[in-house]
Length: 464
Ligand SMILES: C[S@@+](CC[C@H](N)C(=O)[O-])C[C@H]1O[C@@H](n2cnc3c(N)ncnc32)[C@H](O)[C@@H]1O
Ligand code: SF4
Image 1 (tube, rainbow, N blue to C red):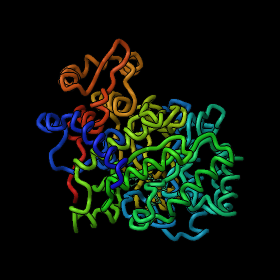
Image 2: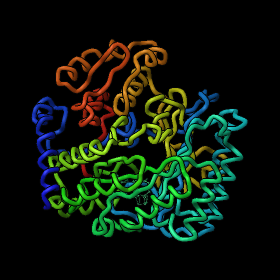
Image 3: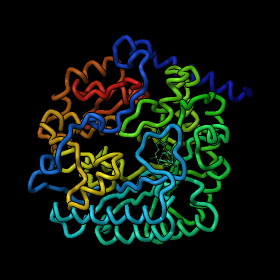
């Protein structure tokens, strides 16, 4: 390791030691010897019971507009080894076009069901899969169908996920032109690592140089914002490689990055091959302690260059670059309308999932004129109260007055014993207006907010 790498490692190890993790292990906040499980939402998706759309939505579902709109495009060039998302590789042009026809029908069904002339959106996130692997013709088709169903007058941010190699060459330029001319503000790109060995090893379709070229391209085309995703804790990944990746990120021209700790346990319906790799030889993966040092390196290197963590695990010089969809969903608790095979929605006090990985069932339900919902809940009062605390606490902060206006109770009263315990461990702090995680609490954000979970909604950690 070069000297400056050693310096960084020493600083990160020292800062990690100062977090006194042993105390949190003993307090049962950080689970000993168990795999990391992120809190993406509450209750966790994997625990949703089976349910028909009618049971969840009722006859006249209420919707608060403008909504956050999520659209799932489940197509990729390759299946990355670490990925548990629902996606398909090698789909033909016609298969993709057929899926888009399904999306069109689905958005019409939501409009009918919710009695909406058009869907008024506060933010849009087109996610995947890899939305940018659509051909220009299918991308135009997709954007036109969106125009038919969606009113973007109040839309603050339109985000679109991309994979670097799809934005290069003439075809990439054409995609970027179409997206820009259609009002997309922000491209969110999966980069994962600026390291060709790791990229090859995880079956990514691009090189490190291509990722940098794609960022420059997005800039040239004048998009408002370019965000990148990076992963730490990959099999075989060293501290040195992670430092190099972070140092390249700060020079890359990206406006923000989201740092993901590798999740080995699947969170959805389609376990990635990483699970098999882990079972074969867990020793090739950085353990919890080394993963924690990597996380600290991500924080320290970002901050050294003026990229702050205003939003847990997302770093930017200016918070306007953070995903507006994530902010609407997790901070403002906006209603979410989903479209696409593996997506989730939340209207009023309901929370529901689409069919996941079953393409045949998805097509069949739409053909029968049914929304493709097959799991979900009407949240009882206690679950809604927990959800309204957990999501903003994990990601930003809880605005006490906003909580009271929404739930009719003060969060500091409802959760007094847990808050007291977490304050005693320097994990949560409170002032007149807000409840928020301390710096120590934010480092363990997932584990801390899990303290507010009802036992029946704690996600399983088994690597089964
Ligand atoms: C749905 S992907 C969208 C980006 C695009 N498909 C790509 O990979 O280029 C969202 C992000 O989730 C992260 N991710 C995927 N699988 C993960 C895992 N097992 N653990 C942690 N993060 C993961 C990756 O950083 C990925 O970019
Ligand atoms: S990480 Fe992105 S590109 Fe890779 S398989 Fe998953 S969705 Fe596709």
